[in-house]
Length: 122
Image (cartoon, rainbow, N blue to C red; front, side, top):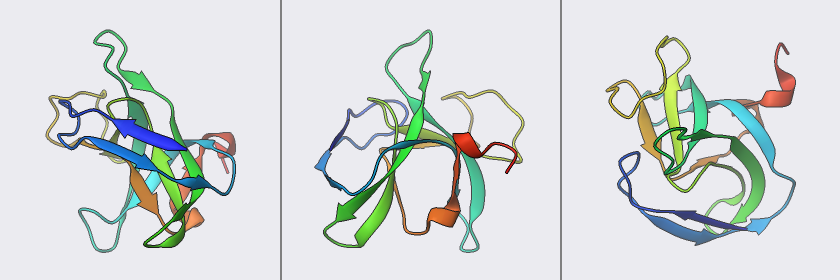
């Protein structure tokens, strides 16, 4: 699989990376990230695109082989990456919010740090 993200207002870093798939992609609602807090925090995640009228898209996680980490869950979205916000935050998705941030993708080591869309209420 190839993940390509253009440099954009959601995330400044562009990316073109290849990964060897080790499982199917599944739609994701939330991820636990350790980027801002060492204890981790659950965040909503969405894919982000270049469509100014409807920038949100699906975010997915897929088990892939990563040369540096072995097997990892790759969380990816649209052409402009993914966007995250803490689950405690009650605001619409917006590039203007200082409480939200974008990433080209996330590498998640533990499947328990991913909440799949099919598991709503579980």
